[in-house]
Image (cartoon, rainbow, N blue to C red; front, top):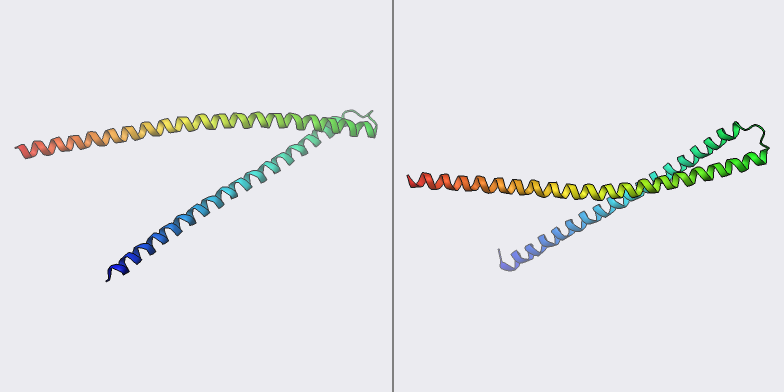
Length: 142
């Protein structure tokens, strides 16, 4: 086989490797976009459910106040719903901040544990290699 043919094959293989890497990058990006879209849909559905719960609570609250006129009932329900939504939003924001804090904290702990595990594994490997080397030297010295 000629030298030119071999170098051409090498370039072809490098191009294939680059194409495969680009495909993996595109797949990773699509997966991240997909995950982000799912999170947004889930957040929307959870917020809509929270608004429904607020409406249900407002209606139940107003049902216990039979002396309200229709316009007063609507006003009380509206204010009650708004108050519930504000409370829910504040609660969700606190949860969001706390979960971000915990994520950062746990990622740090995970990195430290991983570092210790790798250090222990490497130390053990070095110890085993040293033991094997000393054993081999001891056997050859006999």
